[in-house]
Length: 149
Image (cartoon, rainbow, N blue to C red; front, top):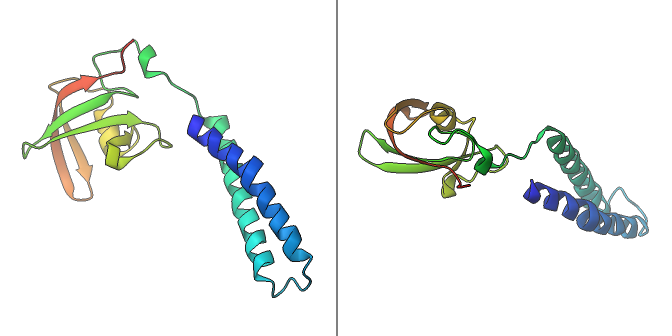
């Protein structure tokens, strides 16, 4: 939420006013039909306005969840880090996050993704079958941690 609010602030208070100034300066140069700075600036303003609208809608829908407050400590829930072993013996760890926090390289996956959805509600030693684009995979959960209280 903080990252999205920072982006909103940057777009609304910094970038948009700068682009508005640039567009006004470009418009003052005359013929707007062949003025690349004016055309690009107007296009950038539309992009910024679309993004601001998207962010404002997300703020209405988002709910900040503190994983430390979960009462359930033995099942995979939002905020949990799950370590699982595949049939090939390879271990993988994923942290279940919201769709705005995904970072595959860091192992942060959406709880709504195929793997995330399969993990939710599971416990250590549970077997999880996941359908991926590469085919069905089976994992056994070997560790489960939630942020401490």
